[in-house]
Image (cartoon, rainbow, N blue to C red; front, side, top):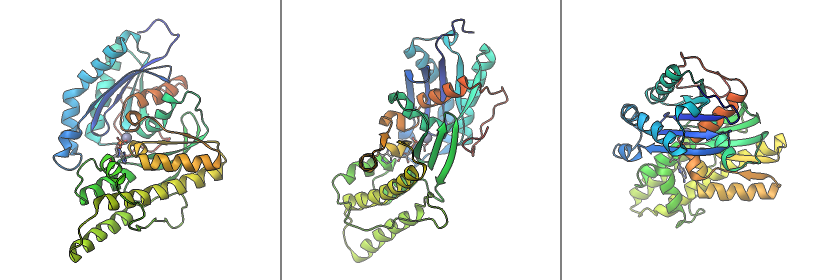
Length: 343
Ligand code: KG4
Ligand code: ZN
């Protein structure tokens, strides 16, 4: 085990969905390496992530990715203070690969193990490039699997203010992209093609969820886009893909901005952050930047590489858990539906 205790160096592992990733993070804010093996091409063939294929690919790649992360950081296991690993939420077979690898290294070396919540990782991605950012703040986490509006009261202390009642924001992007023939993964493609479209061309609904101001619902919007496409096809009207993409994107962004700004106002925080794959959406970033500027709120977002799944964000979250004394036992298991703030 490591002798010099001045710096805290974390080896982080992430395998909750279709990225096999490992990273080395120093003192919670400095990324020494961030290796991501993306399986996207493999799953594109099927139009979405196939869980069994994801697990098999993780097994094939995990050791290589971990070794590469250590090599790029110029570290060996002797330099590592703790191993942080995503143990939920996510695909159970995929999570198990990372969790098993982390446990095996911990067992063989005696390096402490820390199970990290995937969403806590996404939120923590904001700490990497914004050294001045500290809690409290409101964070909107929007990815392929999650849409959460979170109050970050302190490091490791979260309160979920709102969540999606049906599809996640990224899921809506992916489904609409498929319907208009853009393919998988839909988010980046809709983002790109939207730039050539008119966001006000078609009015799609901005759903409100009864009884909860901060919850989201995207399935109605998705159905509305599908109905619009069907009606165009029945009337023989050619689809204007850029207009549909831009109008759909605006409908999603409007709701995300409105809910987020309501929460910022209610809690009176001076800082607001976005996280998750959809946080790299250019329309969302622009709209949030503008809305925050109008309210005199500091706006934070990670670079795109830290928005989509990566292990650096797990290393950052793992660091704050580590200094607060969190340790996981070797019976750590994958928890596919792990709730934020639960252990
Ligand atoms: O965070 P992430 O890599 O995985 C999950 O934890 O789910 O997010 C992936 C999601 C996908 O649905 C993808 O379409 C979406 O993020 N995404 C985007 C953009 N880039 C990725 N959505 C909208 N605009 C983008 N530029
Ligand atoms: Zn994610």
